[in-house]
Length: 261
Image (cartoon, rainbow, N blue to C red):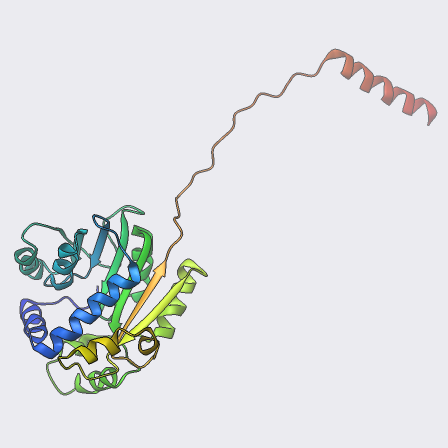
């Protein structure tokens, strides 16, 4: 089941993002997600682990048909106030999604995979319900910020004390095992301090900078090939009855063979 956020966790999460420097980082991460999944207006997307609805409300503002899922009912109430009934919210777990195969165009796990009990199963479920792409956004453990969070979680009340950090290479390996050799791309953000200014935004949006594997935030997009469950059809046929001439001919040939022996 993993770690289920409480109301206090959701409120601290929202308060942290309200800081100007953190808000810039959030906007860049959301822009990176949109650029990597490349959705169209009114496309359907499943926000797995939607929490207090920050990413869900962003996707709604982008004109997408959004469904959010989270295991915490109190946290979903906070999300419902943000989206104002413009998104469908469900209670559930990432490892057991209550949706049919290929139900959504896209599925995203924005800072969710670190908190689930079985990351591989959560990825498998995301790939099952999505048609086109799955996006995974997470803290990069190979970055300076990722290393500091791994240390500070033992000495404070950070929400990341419950997290299990996953590297880009581990994530890519799990995806290859689940869906095969499908197109996968990754980008990172946060190589530079998140300070207000056009220069920071310009540098962070550069594809050359985003290919550096040591950014604080890592995003990975998985392009899926549609898969459908099939069942073999039974073909009912009746064998044609043998004609008398054919049977007589076979008997005659057997008799001739015996005579020559």
